[in-house]
Structure formats: structure tokens, C-alpha cells
Length: 315
Length: 315
Image 1: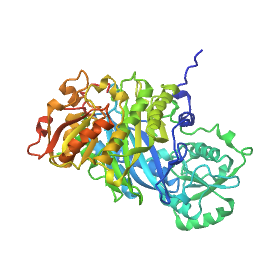
Image 2: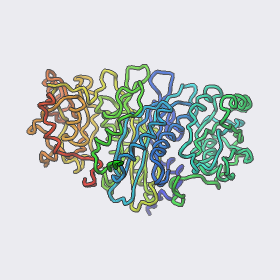
Image 3: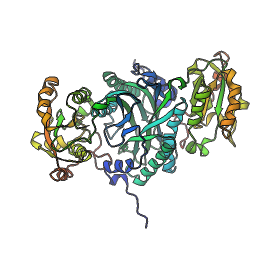
Image 4: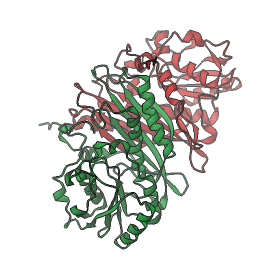
């Protein structure tokens, strides 16, 4: 009897990505492929790795239809920049694909590009190509989708994967978590300078950006490092007006989550405050053995999952 | 009085792209940005340029909903490979973004990726990342969109832009043109080996791939080279069963269109036939001054344009 293939709506995003990442062709130019914040690629015979990331925004899923197009364009590129920052690198060049209903005005697209170009300039990114298309004619209503692919560079000795965490490492997050839908999901600052500083001075053992919320992202980091984690709830830095659940599950924080060896944690705190006085840094827990992990407890806290049809739109 | 911004449906694709390409930030790492088949980027202190291209396929626009997903995945990557070939380079790594309604099955996505991975293996491309998302909840009906971004490399001396054509150069096309919707738009072979061979032995002065049909693409090449063109209609190599209009306007040929200096044209013909006996090469005309150009005549022949709402779907 033939088993029916499950529908995407019945699967989690991680599950789909895992299924798809299996069996992708990769050669020796690939240091790390699908599964980290960015792919890591050899970059000729230089002292650098190249970083490569793709990301997309869908109207009605990742942003509300009445969001000003400048902010949409800004967010589309800033999300990808945040992923490059999470590897310890800096962004270099981007290409953009926009799919828009023909009823959008030229001004809308220009504003979208203006927002994207603004954040590109701020972080030294060249925008080197674009593709435009329209959605299928059977779509009533307006459709908009922006996909951005971004390149970056990082010194070989400063590239930080999700997989390097070890038992005993201390877990840190930058900024305050939760409530991003109140505006931060459109105005966040990708943590490029912070990531560069960290990779230069403290060589985090593992790092990623917080896009789906600590409750989903911390277990991912621990899993890819092959360890467990202990989170001290009382330490989680909550954004103003946020309950614990919001701080853990809202997602779209675009802060850095990273681990540092236990003996360097104290020095990090002191130096951080001097260098980034206006951005909180919080030691929220530590990595431990898988047996002692809080991972099972976290399975019940669900963050943002793209294929869950029950999820409210508007993020 | 405020002038109303035109809607995308009232503008051609070239017009939209031109508007958007204005004012994009670029730095010295960019040898050629938006406007050619690919962006051309510095690649460290090596003898190579890096090529960077994004392209997308929308169900109901670029392929019929009942197209087997393996062929859709194949086409999504093969189109981008064709653009790399058109610069004289070879493809290296790709990332993929897929937006699919939650009602699609996991098997559909797996098949899509299998087709993409197949053509990736054939051309030595590593697939190093992917992003999955769903369309907005207000879409009834099924939505599917695949966006691919692809990197490539080319020796600095062998990179061929659209802009290098000069008066007197002979114009060539590979293969037979027209009727692609009968199947070739899904099964075409990106002309990587042919482009490599050309860039090695004959250094074309300008080259691009034929995606929108000779009637649209030849004027583009001539315009970017700052010259005019003469096309000899009777020489246009028509695919079986195709009238002239189909050969000129159908689009999706994915053949190479290139120009070679007049004194090398004869030698090219002889050597080509020896190296690629099963792929026709045709000298369809020559580049001339803008005053002698047939460009005005071509304005009436319209190829495929993504924002024209009147265009039939299914391509």
C-alpha cells in the first residue's frame, strides 16, 4: 500500500529543511552548507571564507500589507545581514528578487528599493542585481514577495558556526527579547559590529542570530553543538512590557545568541559594557550534557513556524 | 497636483528594471552590476571574477501547475546556469528559496529539489542553502515560487559582457529558435561548455543568453554595446514547425547570442562544427551604426514581458 506523502502544513519548518538538506550536492568548496545561519565557502587561496545566505519576506506572513514599503525593503536585507553578523563576518554584495502583483505602483517598488538601498549603504553592501516577476493570474488580491541573497566575508580564524559549543560554555544574548511585532521587527539593527568585535576579541564557540525566538533557537544551537543547555528563566532580558513567554517565543529579535568558554565569560562582560554601553549583554545560562538538558521542557514552547497554518499572520 | 505613480502593469520589464537599477549602492568590488546576465565581482587577489545571479520561477507564470516538480526544480537552476554560461564562466554554488502553499505535499518539494539537485550535479554546482516559506493566508488556490541565486567563476581575461560589441562584428546564435513551450523550456541544456569554449578560443566581443526571444534580446545586446544591428531574417534558425514570429518572439530558447569580430567569423564556423557537430551555429547578421540599425522595426515585435497582464500564462 502506498503511503501518502504528508502535507507541509503537518510538518515543522525544521523537519522540512532536514528532509530537503539530505542529499544536496556539495563539493570541497563548501566548508558548511545548509543548516547554519549562512553557508561557508572557500574563497580562492585567500585567508577568508565567503558567506552566502538567502532569505525571503512574504506580504501577509512576514509583514502586514499596510507596512510602508521602505521598511519592508529595509527588513528584507537587514534579516540577511543579521545572518552574516551571526557568523562573525561582514556583508558584501546582494541580489534581490521581487514578485509583485501588476496592480502595485512603480512608486511602491521604488520605495521598497529605497529602504533596501538605505540599509545596504549603512552596512557597505553593494546591490548588484535584481529580478522582477508577477504572481500567477489566478491570485485575486495583492501578492508581494521579496527574496534577498547576500554574500559576506570572514577571516578563516574568525568564522563562528552553530556547532562549536561545548559543555560548560556560558550562553549570552544581546539586547532585550520579545515584543518585536510592536516595531522592532522592522527597525532592528543587525549586530554586525558586535559580531565582528566578538569574533576578534572573544572567539565565541558557537553563535547564531535570534530569528525564531530563544525557545526555538537555543535548542537548535545546542543540538548542532551536540550538547544540552540550562536556561535561567529569571535572567532572560525581557523587552518592556513583555512577559516571559513573549521574550522566549515571539521571535524576530535579531539579536545575537552565542556561547563563550566559562573562563572568559567574566572578562567579556566587563569589556562589553565599555564597548557597547547602550546594548545589554546577558548571561542567560550554560551548555551542559544532553542528559541534564532542559531541551524536553522547551519542546512545549513553540516559536514561530512557517508552515503552521494556525499561526497568525502579520509578522 | 501630485502625479499618480504608474502601475507595474502599464510598464515594460526593462523600464521597471531601469528605474530600479538607478541609484543602487555599489562599491569598487563590483566590476559590472545590474543590467548584464550576471553581476561581475572582484574575487580577492586571484585571477578570477566571481559571477552572481538571481532568478525566479512562479507557478502559473513560468510553468503550468501540472508540470512535474522535478522539471520545475531543474528549470529553476538551469536558467541561472544559462546566465553564468553567457558570461563565459562556470557555475559553483547555489542557494534556493521556495514559497509553497501548505497544502503541497512533502513529496512535491522533494521532487522539486531532486530535479534541482540533478542539474546541479551535472554542472558541478553545490547547493548550499535553502529557505522555505508559505504564501499569505488570503490566497485561495495553490501558490508556488522558487527563487535561485547562483555563484560562478570566470578567468578575468575570459569574462564576456553584453557591452563589448563593435560595428562590423558578426552576430551568432547557437541552436534552433522558437517553440520552446513544446518542451524545450523544461529540458534545455545550459550552454556552459559552449560558452567556455568560445571564451577560450574566440573571445566573443559580447554575449548573452536568449531568454526573452531574439526580437527582445538582440536589441538589448546592441543597445548595451552602443551600436545598431542588422538581422538577416532568412538566416534565423527556426525550430521544427516554427514560423518566423515564433523563432523571434517565443522566448525561453536558452541559447547563446554572441558577436565575434568580422575577421574571426569564418574560422569560428569551421572549428565550431568540429567541436559541436550536433549543435547548429548560425551567423544571423552583424552589428552596425545606430543610424543603420533595424532597432525601430524590432520595437513592434514584442517578446515575453513579465508585467504585461495580457500575456498568456503557462510559460
